[in-house]
Image (cartoon, rainbow, N blue to C red; front, side, top):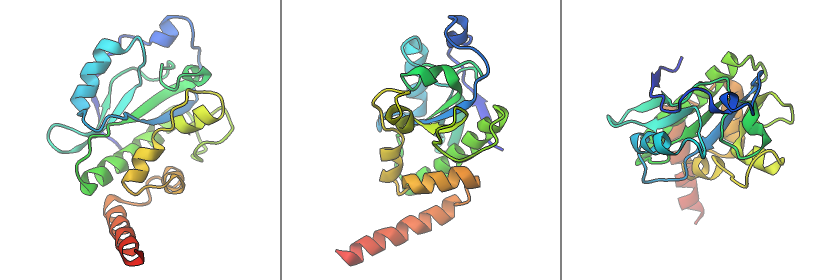
Length: 202
């Protein structure tokens, strides 16, 4: 089980409080921040000032002590301003992966938290099917999928960020479905092997 640190900076449940989102909330959304220079604390500080424009509920990444961490920045079970479309109002939780990652080991550790937290929040929401990006209203969805199906903006996160560190879309699907069956040490070995194969083939 992921230990989630309370760093809530978004007051109340804005989407509900403003009368634009209503229970039940049956989706968990996967994002990445798109800023490789911004620390987790930088992201929280920015969110504290800008949440009326966009907000999410959780942040995963490497904290100030160099450890993989999960922080809760807004209340769950109330929608969010996160995908930029009508699926905002389906959001039980939305997880941003902070892209300031310096080593493969850091990524692997944070990625394991990302996967476990997504499943943990989905269970809280009563989601029983852990198949990523289905057409059903309930489930775990990437921002990319929300965008491509007309329920979000034009963003494609977190796919490009994950691919940069060796996790394909297919691998993400497998890990979400299997509960992070690829552990950080296994992922590191896989990525090293892929790198050697690419070097050999060129």
